[in-house]
Length: 223
Image 1 (cartoon, rainbow, N blue to C red):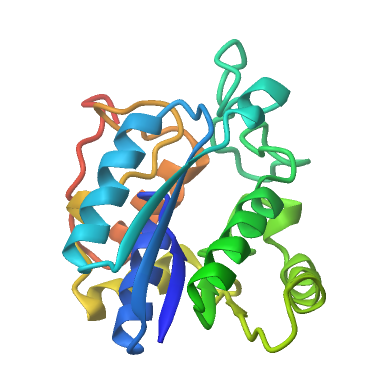
Image 2 (image 1 turned 180 degrees about the horizontal axis):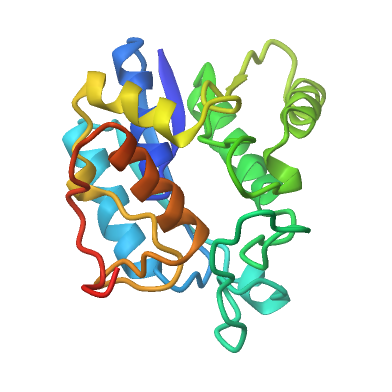
C-alpha cells in the first residue's frame, strides 16, 4: 500500500519515512518550500532521502504564501531565530502559524488522488517546541477532517508514531533502521554549518550525545 510521507529533510521526517518503508509501505514523498531560511538544504536532503527509499513519487509543493503571511522567524529574515532556552515561556518564534494544517490538507489531496492508505507526519509534542499544531488533539481533529472531507469509500489514516517520543527515542529508532543522518538537516538558521544554538540543533545534538555517537552533519566550530 502507498503512504504519503511528508519529507522536510529533517531528522524526524526522515526517520519516519524509513519506518514507513520498514512497515511495508511504498513511499510517496511530499516536500514543501515555504520560504524557510534553510529551504535549499532541506530540499536537497528530502530529495536524496526519497531517492534512497526508492519512492514511487517525489512531489514538491510551493507554499510561499506562508512567507508572505509571515510572523515566523523561519520565513521572516528580519526576525532573529529564537535560541534554545531552558524554562522558556511561550511558543518560540520559529512557529509558522497553522503550518501543519496547510501541509496536511495538501497531503490529504495527494493521498486521496493516489489511493494511498496513510499519511505519515513527524510531529512531536515532547521536547521544547509547544507548537499547537503538533499536539495530539490537533492530529485527532485533522483525522476527523480527513474522514469528513474525502469522498465516500476513502480510508486514509493519519499516522504520527513519534508524537509522544523524545528526540533521543526517535534517534534510537533511526539507528535501528540505519537511517543515513548525514543526509538530513535540522538547523533553523544556516545551510552550510548548523548553528548549534536554535532549538532544533539543541535537541538533535543532545540526542546524539545521549547515544554516545557523533552527529554526521557539520556544526559551527565554536559550538
